[in-house]
Image 1 (cartoon, rainbow, N blue to C red):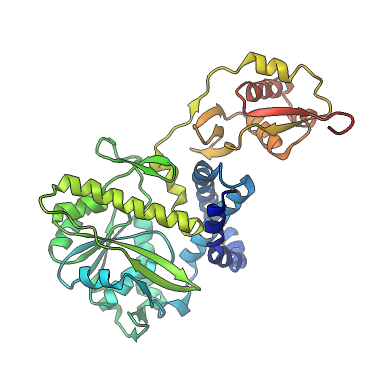
Image 2: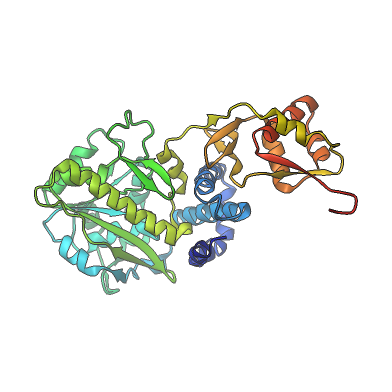
Length: 420
């Protein structure tokens, strides 16, 4: 494994500790059928993204553990109320950027990213006297509203310097506004809020991607984590239209204490067109996001949407090479074992189907149980005969093996009598 990635993975020990410390909460939550389905779906999508990015950097078990840790941590952060942290939002980096940009009546687009206890950010801003318009989907809007109405946050709002203040729920409702991201009027609502001098919060890494949004013609193609992704320019676009700056904000946890890192604001240049600013600001936001993910891969909650940003569909492979098949099957299969020939071959759930897929090229062999079963057997180094006889349809199993060998995905290794 690359030493740099080892260091980065080691830096995520806090996230692992959070997840391990909440095994009991996860066990109880998984007893709820609705939660369990959501967890599995999110973990499958997370695994797909992590495998695509890290297949040549981490071994397969590490990638699976990463996916599990990311999802357990995300769900626990969502449903577990840590009352001791509401008052302790005191770790700040880049405070000068916040002081200069978050003026009381300036209007600014803030772009928090899905790290740490980001849900505290809106309340922290309200406590500092800002009117906040928070863009989120309906489910998260309902969750945030419930925190404001019933949660401990309605009693204590964290302030800079670790001080506490008592607020009425009516004060919170007057200053904090949810904007439904699915509403046709969402863009107009944000624009008007900015022109009134309010703070508008938009997640650049939110659960949107480019699916179900029509044409991608105006979506920039951005290099990201070794891939090329298509992204909407929502945050930068709204800022450009309203003539406002963009303030990137990175929430983080420091030994269990939530904090904020304020990046330098992204401001339109003199005579820079709105279109150029929109694309430049978007690229800068994703450069910051990429930097944070590389440094803390287990703390980013949105791995489950990354594969949609790639906007890929599995592609069919060309015909297998007959000579490779003939060479591999020339010797008796007895005493031989199956092995993966490439580290990027995975069986992954895509659109509710399990695909045998090379995540490096996204070439797909198909979805037959024989293909996916033999790949699992090859990963385990199973005896060839045992792997083939586990299927009822022997002919289909042999055909699947020939295909896997023919395209260079699986190889057969023979063990000599002397162990060589």
